[in-house]
Image 1 (spheres, rainbow, N blue to C red):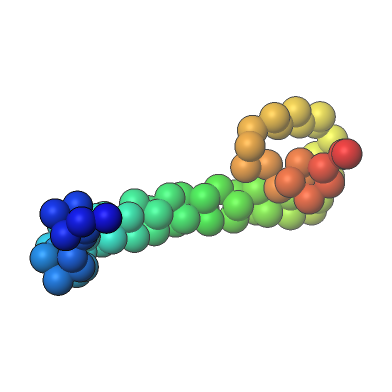
Image 2: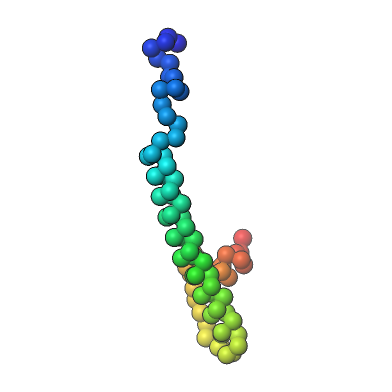
Length: 76
């Protein structure tokens, strides 16, 4: 390996503005998604409590990926 092909870390800034903006964007997007999924989970629990109190006997088929029952009672 010659000096012309080596890479010097002093030439590149590890912490630059683009990296900072990418990290902030990543945090904001994932925070928004977490907030949405949190309210979807609250809605699932609210429906379960309501249907139990009101003795709702309707059969509910929910095949969505955020369904709590399929996440907890996953059949292997």
